[in-house]
Length: 106
Image (cartoon, rainbow, N blue to C red):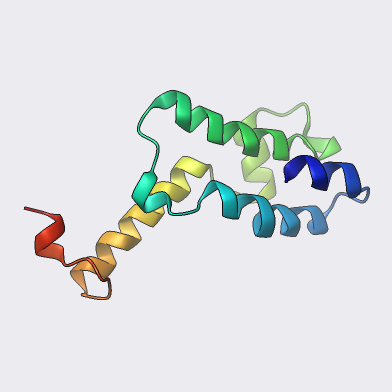
């Protein structure tokens, strides 16, 4: 999906950011609270996609990954997975989830 976007979009600005957020990140974060990658190699494989996306901006190519993320106002995928986990636990505590708190945590 990211390759398709990079080949077809010439004017790389907010349009590129919106396309990536709406088309690419959905695939990377699908059910992340359920299947969150445990192994470091799997986490790095997912993070590589966002590395590649941040390098698509010509003025950010030379910067390190963390600087590119802060310049674009993005979080790393690991931070987003942690946030999703915390939100899911909050929903369980407030009984807004289908999974009951006492069944999930012993």
